[in-house]
Length: 73
Image 1 (cartoon, rainbow, N blue to C red):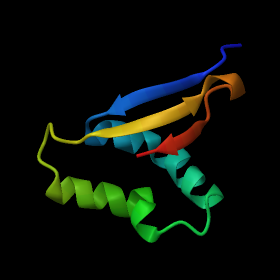
Image 2 (image 1 turned 180 degrees about the vertical axis):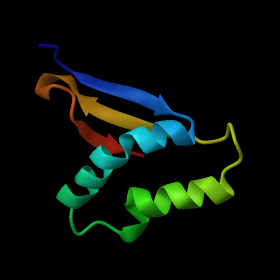
Image 3 (image 1 turned 180 degrees about the horizontal axis):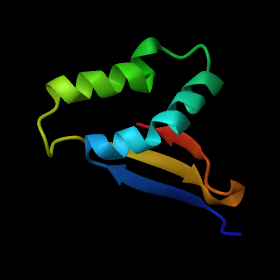
């Protein structure tokens, strides 16, 4: 088992799509999160307002817990 935090850059809409389920779960667990933090809203916004190649997000995982998503910005 690895120990530590893993931070991964997310720079395209395809990568956001791959994180959608985990991201939605993280949002649900962090209730009462803002609807603007939910992947359904954020992905739609990014699709229309972020030029291709300009997306800058990070996914944070806890390797000690078998890498669940623990943060997203």
